[in-house]
Length: 635
Ligand code: COA
Image (cartoon, rainbow, N blue to C red; front, side, top):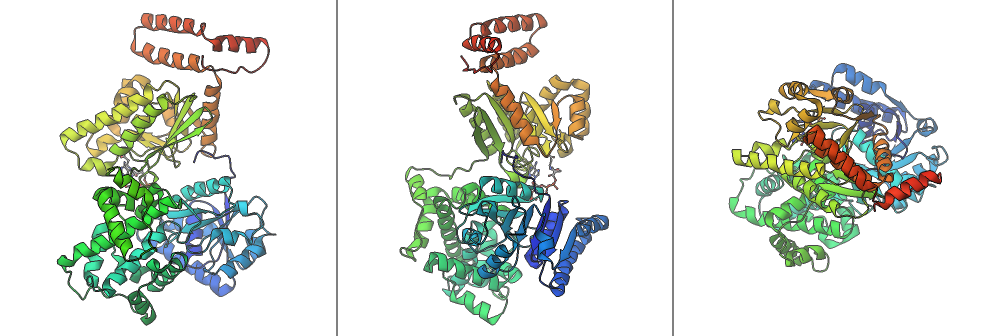
């Protein structure tokens, strides 16, 4: 997500004030957006408003929100039956009427002449094809899918679905909107079940199937589901809470798309037709049957997840993120696959597939990786996006505010090492993939560390920081949201920090019983002196971007809205200058800071002298003479 040049979405129209529509409207209003909700008649509107008021009352009761905040949220939402007045002038229209293709298409045709030409229209669907729905809309490039998970006001996951003709700028704007709602987007292709439901709904069905086949009783299946996926609810309790009919209908639509392996089990259908909740509590867990249930659940989940990636529906990272954020599981399918090992995971998927000859293909990628002896499926926690001479290095664990675990720190080090050898990179922007830099080292991981592991962890962070500091070309850290603890320590290793308004920076480690160990205390001292560093570190104070600028460890504060554009412009400006001169002066400044003044001055003169031997010097001065822009080649 490096492109913020696309339109910012400020006013939202939501069509349909039912369970999903009212939840979506609430999430938007909570993020400060003005929302207009449209439903067909006064009764539907009363119901929608009632749903929202109930959700908000619950939030006030749980002290998640004050009464004043609740009133402010409600004050940002208006309800109406007037379609024209609702959608006209809105930057974004989210359709959330019930799951019926004909009804939705009719609605898109009706709003087509009313919406602004550059407004984005999104359908909230869990089962219909976004591309087919887009056919009813004259600007399919501005049309996409947004799949909010129930309850939409609370669940943090949103699948952002690209239709066949959706423009990348539309997806980018929607992704940014999702972050603004304090939710986590995952991108998926327009395939049945998108990403999460493709493996989640068959898991619910599999629970019923296992019972139907007599593999185990409900209590055992329920317990294995909870333990295996690290979830609070097992499959039967989940279905009771979210609705057995929903599970049945969702599985039926997967069956239509993918065939018999996805057929709803008879047991699920019976339960649905009887309208009864599952009763798993009246039986005893049978420990001897747990292994069989576990193998089936794993075979199914690994089999489907690896196919999702092979079919290009979602990345492995998005798939795991979907499970963790949307389903509140402790692990995603790919982490589980790595835990059991690729060879065993392949065996489990193949065993599952044997029951469905020709209908449950096993991922060729999984076979190849297992045949190569790979044990783990690699997950990228650091992404690189190259934009001409500028490389964006993006910390990518948005579900935990990019907190830095060992894996991420190792990948950060490896990323900068690889970039050292990459040709043509003249500047790097180090940022979060979401509008957050990093909320510290991973506290969950640190909790389990011994003394020796704590020392090793500090050095791991220091190696990554040093790699960034010594990177030959300039590295700009763009801090949006949070740069706390280890996050700030890593940012301080960049050549300078650009902070977005509203960003919060600090070294709060002493509040956790530890202190900075990745070089933050040392680097900050060299930057702003001992007294200011001590004030910050002893108090653990979290300061705003402006305060950090005044204290001297942020080089510039930029508006939050345009932070990425500012970082891009700055990096492009650096990249347009003579690359060797920039690299060498970086070394002069850094080495000079550690040397005596006399040595530093000598180093500076000598290094500057060397620039006279470069062809970039000839080009730069000739271009000045000829009144044109120089074209530097780094020679
Ligand atoms: N390590 C591990 N997980 C972290 C984390 C960290 N440093 N910082 C945030 N997270 C996780 C949260 O546990 C939460 O996970 P969950 O959704 O599974 O519960 C998720 O990231 C979102 O954070 P949350 O606290 O819900 O967001 P918020 O907007 O309410 O608060 C912060 C944001 C940054 C103020 C708060 O997360 C925080 O104080 N984090 C720790 C900061 C810190 O002490 N860092 C120094 C460590 S060296």
